[in-house]
Image (cartoon, rainbow over all chains, first blue to last red; front, side, top):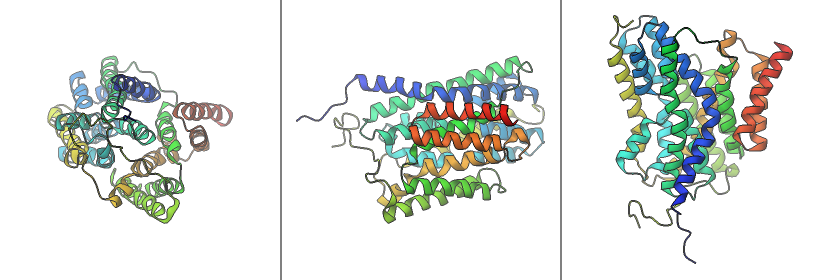
Amino acid sequence: MPPRSASPTRPLAELGRGARDALPFLLVVFPFAVLFGAVARAAGLDVIAAMTMSVMVIAGAAQFTALALMQEHAPALLVVASALAVNLRMAMYSASIAPWLGGLPLWRRALAAYFLVDQTYALSIARFEAEPRLPLAARAAYYAGTVLVVCFPWYLGTWIGAVAGAAIPARLGLDFAVPITFIAIVSPMLRTPAHLAAAATSVLAALLLAGLPTGTGLILAGLAAMIVGAEVERRGFGPAAPALPQPDPDAAEGGEP
Amino acid sequence: MTAEYNIWLIAAAIGLGSWLIRFSFLGLIGDRQLPPWVMRHLRYTPVAVIPGLVAPLVVWPEATGGAPDPVRLGAALIALAAGALTRRLLPAVVAGMSAFWLLQWLLG
């Protein structure tokens, strides 16, 4: 029986799926972008400066951190260091997504890295683990779909917020939509005791380490939680068949046998 | 602020640094086979980082000045349960936000 080959329509379908799956996050990303634009403007940045930050960084937490420190007249080096500390968790995302997207040519990986944010990572990793047999092209398309819906509205929202300035109405508790959307994306992943143990460790450690400089507590909590998850799995309470990238049935890309 | 800081330089520095962080493993490892123990740990990255990222936002919300809020705690638990039971994103978001607005109306 010939191997089931990756149909040409598959990547296109995955692109649409990625965009569709990312829609709930739009509810959060767009208002936050608008808020950032407005806050940046209020802090004294012009529209172009606000846009520059959003285009260069695409990370809300880091951008807000930088703004807050600049408003407190912190040294430029501290502004940059703090923003980067907040983004350190992206190193873990990079390591985690490497097995799934690592087969792409270097320039496409560099591009994918630019768009690697909490939401594109979370959505994509959930999809890749649920469907490990997706070919690389389909995975890349899914990721691109999430990027379209998560990252481009970030630019647009920033622009709107910066231009509209002070005329932004208060959000109706949309700040709480941030944790809700992430809880929604993670809770289906809590399939085994190992996953549950890791998540519980993550929560406890993050709360305990909250006093540490921004970003460092989360890194430590993340590492501790990964170790707990791995240990529980080693003792037999993990997934029966761990989700791993399956070799491409066609192996058309890259040419690896 | 623009007089005090070179915003372009700061944005570029944060942007470049962030990209290097994001590209670190994706660029260096690619899809090279990693040892089983590494994969065993990496497997838990999403459930190890995202709950920790979110927990302070739920327990010490900025909207209440950091004070724990039963409305948010309750809504978060409902979102968690909905996600775990339905295994789908949208029902969990709808359940969580609905619970939030409902509890806020009842208790707020």
